[in-house]
Length: 156
Image (tube, rainbow, N blue to C red; front, side, top):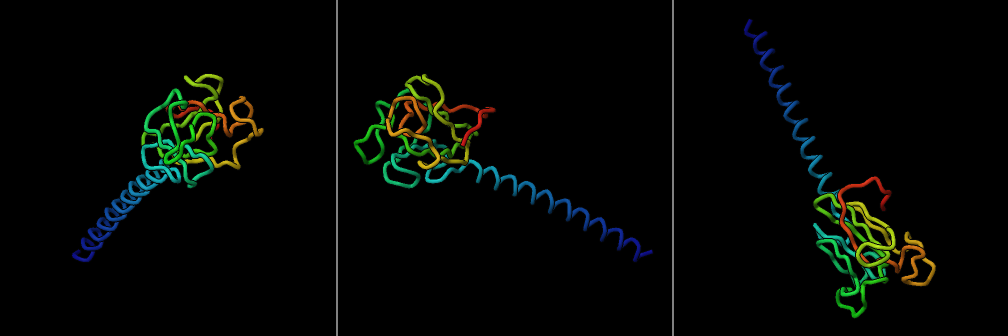
């Protein structure tokens, strides 16, 4: 009888340990996935970043909130205006917001491109015609940024 009770207790302990281990793994994995998913390259947590030349190149700028008008913003350490000069973008939203970039100020002129949380787009991925600010293509076209909750729009 003693050995049967010991086996039952031992089996119960193993089941409890397995459930606890699986729960910890799921919680830890979900936490790691959520943290990783919100971190875009070369952009601090909680920010939506644009770049003049490309990801990681000098001349970035981080936005914490939406900005309806890029004409008063400059790339960090440069005297180059962000308006119609964005070549790359990264999204490190901690709130799950997509970065939506528009052709004109005040979110007008239509959507240029958008970037999902934890993702980025580099210069070579954006279409362009070599003329900035003409509403053709995506590179050298963004004039405003609107942070939106998750949408069904296909973003980078």
